[in-house]
Length: 313
Image (cartoon, rainbow, N blue to C red):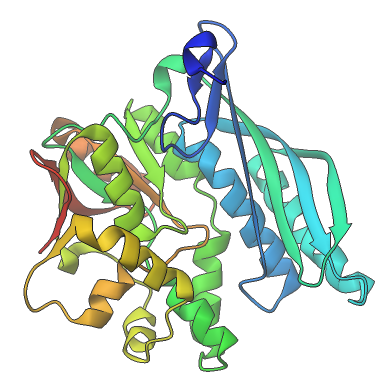
């Protein structure tokens, strides 16, 4: 039977609910390894490739690492035009090029529905790894991308979205978390996660539980894409939002008066979402100032407190 104690160089593995595995090479270097892939969330194959690659790379940034090598994971329909498949791969390759990552190969199979993603390897200093279990009471909670991606892309699938709304969400999903990760490293932060399929409240719940703290989030401070409220009122939530609500809602306490659709927006699965960072209060002002200088979005959305679970007020 596998026992993590038999592998002292495995710094992060199955025992922790973190975003990637971390294997220590020596006192200065550790490998960060992750993989992710999914079916198309938008119609344009190039954008889909970019988004899938950015999403796969995100786990490395969420662990404090810098990615350098990737492998494609690809499932393609044989009846699709070759140009369609090529555009998916081009999108992934160009996003990796932007990140300074080499795609060194991969594996492709045939499937009825396209699927694309990456295996990604990065490097991190073992003493600067970001994990979910190091949040301290008093830490500010900072988010680096807005929410509302899932409810908007589902509206697209239901043919209820506008091109302008989709374009706004695509721009955010294609944005790398590289600068956000670099900012976390510059300020020597210790705790982070990226907000993806389990939603803000799902990933936040994991982070709070792993750190044995509570989170207090202020709804009015949480950023959303401009169309999120519109599609929330239309209830174009993906099935994953209901799954997240069913599983994580027992850990969440909502202030009376927050509408159901707004509650569900916090359970909305995000594709290639931002980083959720725990910033010690003495560093917060300088952190936000530096974010502005870097043109890196950063919203202070709450605080870690003594206790457990999440309060949304």
